[in-house]
Image 1 (cartoon, rainbow, N blue to C red):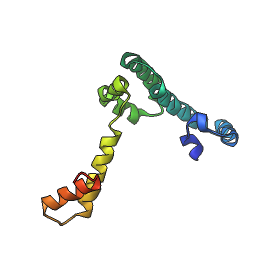
Image 2: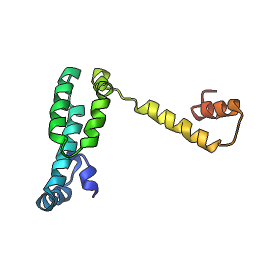
Image 3: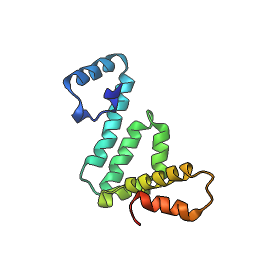
Image 4: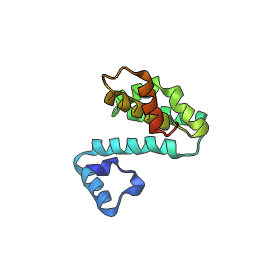
Length: 128
C-alpha cells in the first residue's frame, strides 16, 4: 500500500479515505504511519540542533514500541543525525558517488589495471 509511504500533505482524497479504512482494521499500522510522519516533520521544521535533540528524544519514547531497531540505530548515529541541523545538508551526494564507484568496480571485475579503473571513475563525472 503506497499510501502509507506518501507524505501526509501529498495524499489525495481517495488515499485519505483508504487511511481511514486502515485505521478501523489496523490501528497499529496507522500509529506507525503517524510516527513516520512525526519523524519526517522533525527534519522539515526549522529548528536548532538542541531543539532537534529534544524532539528526537521525545519521538523515540513514543516510537520505541513500533520501531525498536530504528531507535537503536538512531541512538548509535545521533551525533551524525544532529549534524544535519547545523547546515541542513546530508551525505546523500557523497553516498551516491560511492555507490557509482562501487558499480564501476563491479563492472570492472577481473581487471587489474588501476589506472583504467581510475579513468573510468573520472570519465563518469567528466573530470578528464
